[in-house]
Image (tube, rainbow over all chains, first blue to last red):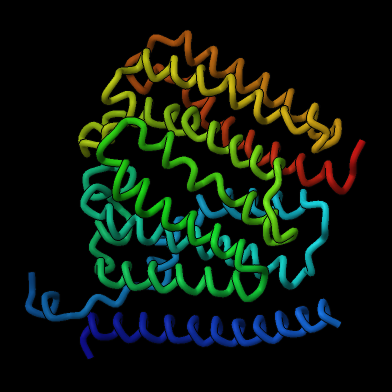
Length: 42
Length: 301
């Protein structure tokens, strides 16, 4: 693997990790919004 | 250039994607949005409030990404912006466009679901205003670009307020007007000492088109209604004395600094200390003023 490919892999890996963290955070946020909305209606 | 460089697809680093959202500008947008929300007479559920502020930040980031997508050629011509991800060649324009459009839809939809659809509509309007009215229509055509385009940056307190209350009343409109009138002195002070940058890029900023003296006069003239509008919530009974005193004090300081700018005759950036001082103060001004409107609601004198 040449240095360019290594750099591309490194960037893909860091972006994939960040995307995974953001998706997990989004799932938690949607859950929290749902609970908050249910609380307001109750 | 090697063949590897030509065939290698551009995979932007996450830092470049973050840079597309202009994080420093976002901080002011988030702060004024939060202040508008905290100034509202009804509290918002913390989770929904957090989500609304997140959506304001994401919407601002989306608008900034679309601005950079459209202005990549212009950014390449200015020292101040040449190192941004697109002009520096670290990212391709198509990715920036997809990111900006996707983030715009995401922020507006999430705002609608978490807060209310009026707020989502105002957020959508602010993104469209910044991208279509300011970036595409006005910026390269008229020295009034930041006067009209400044409205885009004035929406956050209205959005914050609407997220909490579900409506828009006189106080958020006055907060909108304050930022709207603050924008020309703020940007014209900057454009005076980075004039050569704008001139070389062909952007018709006021100092480039009308000269330094006319720009300094306009800075002063815009400061007068800005101070009046910023203090107005106090005599109108919309805020308490704490906000009124802070707004009046800050306004007088702003007026004093704009008078120093008016009296300055320098044409070279080295002699533009009053302009640099006004630009730096204008940022502090907005932070303290909007901090005061929020504190006044929760800890009135």
